[in-house]
Structure formats: C-alpha cells, structure tokens
Picture 1 (cartoon, one colour):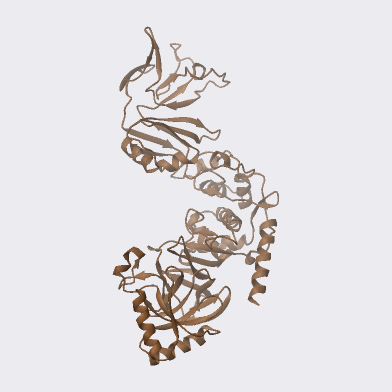
Picture 2: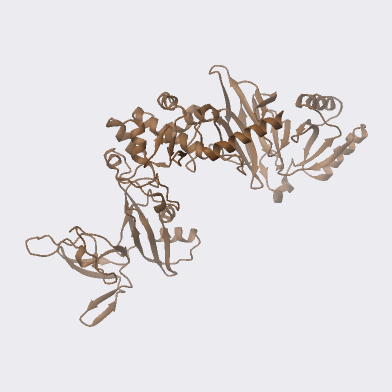
Length: 564
C-alpha cells in the first residue's frame, strides 16, 4: 500500500513539473530547511503542545513525550556536545551499539521488548528502525571494547546480539531525561508533530520556535544534521509574507507579495532534491519564521489570493522580487545569466516615491578593507591603486568593475562586485581621489555660462583619449567609463607623460583643484536594495497607495504575465 502511494505521489509531481498545471493550492506542500534560530547543526530540541506524534511520510506510527532532543548518531561529551571523530578520545558516548537478535513489526512491539530487557538487565534498550523492520538496540558506547563488554553481558543472560558501528548514519531521539527512545536510519521520511488543541492545528516547536505542519531531519555533507519543515503551501505563506513585506502596508501590496511568494515557492519544488528540501528559511529562498510571526493582515492576503500564481506563456515564472529598485528594475541577464522574457527592466517611479530608506545610500571603505575583501576572495593583493567602473547597463547597474592592484587588473562582473563589497545594490558610483569619470569632448554640457565656457561637472572628468568620439543627441554629460587616473597619459608641451604623482592639479570652471590620487577612502554612492529583478516591494507599497490592484502591480513588474 505504501509503495502504491509513493508511485501515485511521484506520478503526480512529474505531471506538475512538466505542465505546471494550475491545481488547487491545498494540493501543494513544501519542504523548508529550518536553520534559524538554531545555533548548531549537530543537535536540536523539539517540543509539542501535547504528546509528539511520529509519522512515516503521512502515516502516523506512534507517539512520544512532549519534549525531545534530536542528535546525530555519533560521539558526544558528558553534556551531549557533538564531537568529531578526531575528538572521540574525550567522548563519553559514541556510535557503537549492540543489536539484539530478532525483528518486530511495529515500534510498540519493539518498545515492549526493550522494556522487558530493561526489567531484567541493567542497560539502556530502545527501538531502532531501518525502513523495513524494527529492532531492539542497546547503548551508545564510545568504543568497540565497551560495546563488546556489554555484548558479553547479554550473552551471559542467553541473549544473542551483535556489535554495530554506525557513526553519522542514524538519527537518535532522546527524551527529557536523556534516555534514547528511538533511533532510525538517516534518509527515512520520519516526521514529528503535535496537536495544538487551542488553535486546532498541527504545530511543532523547534528550539522554542513553533511551526505549522511537521518537522523531519536529515544528515547532509557527512556530519550536518538539518531540520526540515513539511508544511502545506498556504500555511507556509502565512509565515513568509509578513517577513518579506510590512504587514501594515496596503492590502493590495500584501496580495501582490502573497502571489509572488506562492509562485516562487511552487516553482522551487524539487521532488528529487538530494538534500531532501525545496527551500531555505532565509534570503537564499524566502524569509520564513513560522507560526509566531504570522499577522492577520498578511494571512488575509494569502487567503484572498489562494492558489493564484504568475504565468508567462502558460508556464510558471521565477517570481524574483527585491526591496527597492532605486528608480528602475533590471533585466535578468544583466544580473545573472539567463534572459527571462518576463524579467525585463522597467522604469519604476513608484519605488522612488515610496519613501524607501534605501532609495539612496552611501557605503565607505578604507582601502585596506577593500584589499582584505579581495584577498578573502582568493586574490593575492597588497595594494589597491584605484577602482574602475568599466560598463554600466541601460538600467544603471554596474556590469563590470575592475580593481587596479599591484597584482594587475581584477575584474568583477554583474552582481559579483556588489557581493564582494557588501553593497546594497549594483547601482552605484564611486567617490575617491584616484577614481575619475572619463567622457569625450562631445559629452560635456556646452550650454552658455555667460563666458562661453563649458560647464565642468564637480567630479574630476577628463577628455577620453582612448575611445572614439560618439555623437550625442542630448547635451547632458554622458559618462563612458571611470577608473584611476594613475597610469593614464596626459598630453603636454613636452609630449605624452604618464601620470604617476600622488597629487595633481586640475583647472576647471571652479578654479584650480588639488586632487589626492592616492586617497585611502572609497565611497560608494548607490541606489536601491537588492538584485533589482522583478517586483520592487517598496514600489508595490506605493502603487497600492495610489490605488492599483495587486494584479496591476504584478503586471507592471513582470512583463507579459497572466495571474491565474
């Protein structure tokens, strides 16, 4: 019967992924890796509102007490702090066990047998499950000799058993008295939940934070115990929307967020994920903090848009969104790689008018801080001479940024520059004595100033002598590129000279200006927060305030889409 259920579930999911057919929302569930507020991957605590029920997939198999600890089957000190194998010499507990002869059909049968053994023999006995059968195991010994000694004790009582070693292969469940009550093979779909009778919903607390649905565990990367929340889609959105947008904002913006978050979540479902989850609970996916963070307004937004998602050409989209666009959103290929037809840059006056505190920002670094960031990213740099913005997209974001160093020119493209520097967006310019903005002679504003001189912008701007002149219909300044003046050539009466001085004098309409070309401070003047693709959340806030509906908001930010 279980095999038939698995086949039916797998067939349904394959059909969904191929066609993205619009089913009712309750058909979907998601698996979310819960990382916060946990401090350690190697262990965690569960608490129920009543006895905790244990499930295999969706089938209830037995119940345990209200408070449990979940650990990897490995080495621990006397306080159950996880130890690596290299530290196992200081371990009090370990991954050696004795497995008693015989199998059982259920947890309760194995538990009864374990209780009988404990009544006759001094030791810790508990049920173990490998996905097929239940066994009775004993002990969590720190070494083979300790396990062997206990095996001898069992043999003296006429009990046949075997020493097994399973470091980092099983998951161990302890009660609140530090007794093992259950152990099972990692990778099995075992889940834990409880009923909150006051709210009439299934809830489980992990490290003190409650989540709807159930919680499961898996071991990844050899030694990391991860927790996975299994939750239906709409309940998941209750915990996402208030953490991605302010619950006090206009209802239409909350609905737009709910639809975008639902679309993003369903697009992210991966039945064959090797780690066993679809989404993370942070900015890598969507911020999801569970039941205690839900708000009435955002729950209402989820309910009133139930099942609605965003499609382009009848296929579900990747509904990216960000905080603040800064005045325009961006084409997807200018940030990442793929050119998505629905993720086109659009003018975004609404974000500018929204009052976002991230419309404009300044981030300043000392030169040494930037060198440290470069070296943390595997660049062998001891000095930084300047930073050059080589290319800017049509939507104002930096496409290539070059760091001029003693180890040569180091190029960072698209999002990589802002990620390296920890900037809020890739829409930025640079203020520094060694950074100049180069323009050709036709790009300088030549409106009359009374003395027939061109207006020279306040930043250092040099005639571009390396690029061909471009005809400009506009008379406004057009920056072609920027970078350090050091190493460039100046034309003088004695010929071309390479600029190498640390201080230079420039003559402009403002008079003679002395510029320090070796400034140790770099100020990044920027706009917006986030990657800039898709919906601007602050822009959605403003559009809702101006009377736009949630579907109009979504269609403004996602090109050529339908909502259904």
